Length: 253
Image (cartoon, rainbow, N blue to C red; front, side):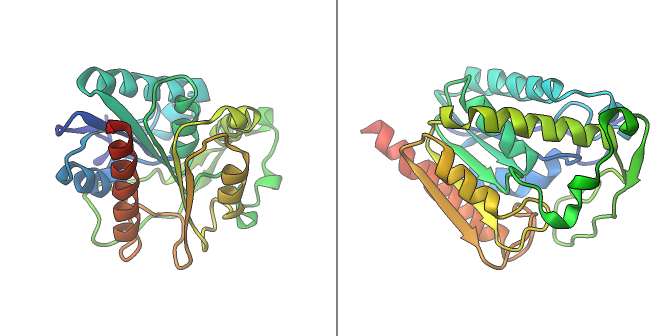
């Protein structure tokens, strides 16, 4: 059983592929509008579903972060077989996996959308119980009620397994331990009003990666849902497409 919006999607286009990675408890549908925007501009797009997402919270609770990374690797393998070059875009926790993938695969560009290198203080992450105490424990999650979004984009889990939050924090720690090895061209996008991923995360990435080509794009009026929020997503899509195209032109010279 899958929730509506959980289906991966593939949009064939040119020889430059873009891998889209959704965030923690998210769905591929959250990135549908971005995928269509890029596909209309000539990119081949594949949006994956991370293991344990879009089914049941019990499935999610059984996943380790390496299972999520394997989902990313599988998507890259598919897309790299169809395209000459592959770029990767991740939203929220998906951005963490995008950066990790860039260290083990040939990635043309990375776009990080609201990477949660630091969790916003409002989330109270310091009150998370120990991993052992989190087993079989869930916390409620507010229903998402966005309008003017693709079908299924609001279908996030209504509960969140606490043990899975530990897995998310663990993979963030893995990235931070290797952050100086990130050297792919990088666009860092973040909302200044993000109450999930602390906006200081953008500064951390910019200051610690090794990428000689790196750009930081901060939206003063934006929150965390950069690929979905009307009035924000249009600027995110345009800046992302420009970044991918500029770098592609340089590589073709």
